[in-house]
Length: 166
Image (cartoon, rainbow, N blue to C red; front, top):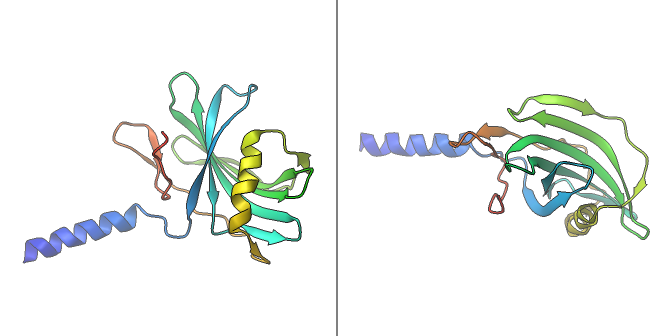
């Protein structure tokens, strides 16, 4: 009996320590750009998508990988405002950059100018965000992002990211 309770306690502690309950990340796709040596996986925080008129505001998480070895070397979190109607435009409102060990390297909270959507992954972001948008919802809450080492030494996320594409 005491052994079962200890086992259940260990399981509960494991589950609680490895789950970020405040953020629900949904996988969008893979981004690439000829100017960057690598690619990135993009996730949307479905809990923070807000809509006002023809704009949506949302948070995306990007995991960057080296082209040669596929090892994650950086993660970034971006608050984006996008104009949904054509021609589509988007701008970054906030950005937070993390190194491979999960430490914040840099952040920028100065909103940028609207730019035309030029990468297919940015169109996908907007398409993916619209169904989750809540009118008048506040997207100001910065989502939870945690990085932990996997047993292979590579980085993995513990924010309920669907990792099946890695």
